[in-house]
Length: 260
Image 1 (cartoon, rainbow, N blue to C red):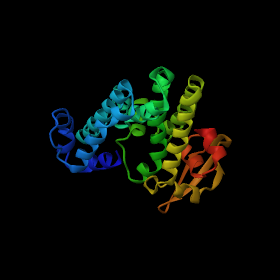
Image 2: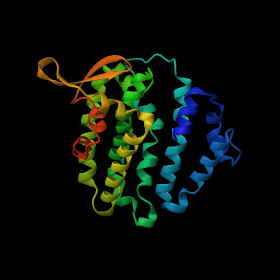
Image 3: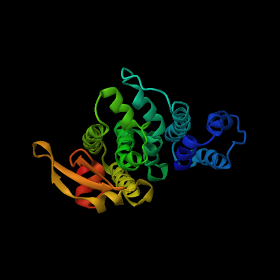
Image 4: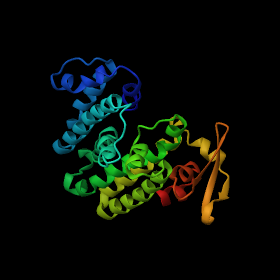
């Protein structure tokens, strides 16, 4: 997924434009990595019941289409009245439904009725948690085509304020998920949640260690706690309550579980 995400945004879009048609017609892909990806999708019915495998494959195909759409709309101005568009795009590029359903293999005797009502909240949590934990690296790279910036454009707020909103939404989603699931399905979710956050913390791709090394508490307007960051020679400040990335970067299990 990371390969497709990175390559589709910078390279030739042709392999991604042709992926679904080639997949459905069992034709070779235009990129050998995509051939392997197609083979992996074909194995989903081995590990998951029919509905769950179908949902994983559908979400994965939508992911490739979403990455293609991002490439095609790179320079498209965002109409501030198109308030549904940011999440329309994000719901495709996040491949969150695939990750959601992958938590529940048939070998663990999961059935759709055990988790399906929590699936929408899990999918949303996956999307926005990635947005939160990617915000730092994407800001440093000057990326503005992501969900945070697109949503900021249509709600007329600063991107960092949108991140704050996403933190609160992630908390509410977690409460909903953990109130809906029980038994083995709840255990599967909690295992995934810990692994998902740990993956972001441990990968240099997200550059979160830079924040942990740069923490410098201060007080902002109205007595609000702020964190000062010395990044790439530039001083930045952001509200502690509004940035999950600051707390996550502390690699403190107590803080991690409080925020996530």
